[in-house]
Length: 297
Image (cartoon, rainbow, N blue to C red):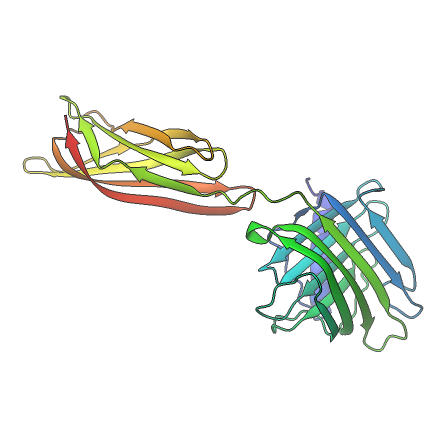
């Protein structure tokens, strides 16, 4: 789901507003739209965030423009942002103490706002009207929590209560997030066969295999280096593109180029790399193999 420019500007406004209030609300790195969700909040008279009103939003009966995003961090922090063209904007953050994951059955009483100190905390902000409180005391209970790779939020359910410092009334609420089971994180293994071939024109053919955890296509950036008595250091390059099928060992082969580089029988060094981009979890890494090969006819 693509966020509109209006929402991007509103998010920037929220960040500036909360910053002016002395709050720490970093932008989520892994926020993603939730498939199933609901958010309810009921305010008492004297509560500055709700102004004493009640609100309920649900994916079962959405209004135009409704969007719920959720994210986590180290299974210790949960956050959500709700946007609506018809109403307003909410942001909720819940944190467990340092080193403790948020899990079903956890209850924390009389906690302040998340501040990076490693203590449990809760914060609610209303962006539609710019309502927040600089200091508050709250409680929350985690009813259900299930996490996937890279802070993927599969399920999260919690009830909470918050009272702003100095307010005559508080609020209580509940959040539900449900997403499909997470895909496995993309991982790739790369092998290079210890024996390669070289033809009578000096062109080498390198072979190997790859495996992967999810279907994708990968390009190998390879360099073959051989030290020769007359020519000195000879370098050639290979770059096969391989469609990978999870659960299968997929063979590959590639010839060196350019054609004016002449390899000989003997030993050579091969350095091979695959740049892996996991767009599901916005993770990028390089798989590398360095091998000594024997070049034969």
